[in-house]
Length: 114
Image (cartoon, rainbow, N blue to C red; front, side, top):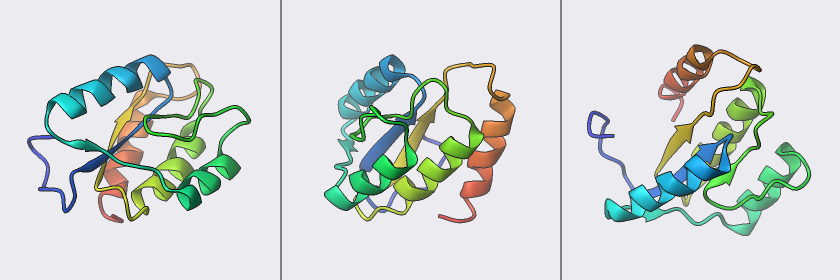
């Protein structure tokens, strides 16, 4: 994150397709004196409509191991648009559903939107 523009808010969301790495990243964020963003009711409700049944719509947000690029994109669009989120850390556990490079390109394209 040191090479990125300064955030307007220090409230960070973690979006991942693997719960364990999300928890470890959350701990590192807190240790770095940043804040874990709170997901308000309207954000959690919107995420519930996007994610599979049983997904925990709190931060860190585990969008589950079978997530494809479309689920990552839709989730990031919603989370980045939330008033309580200043930045997002995205973690991807390798899967056969897509190439990591595709996700990296998708994330890079989002910087022009948010």
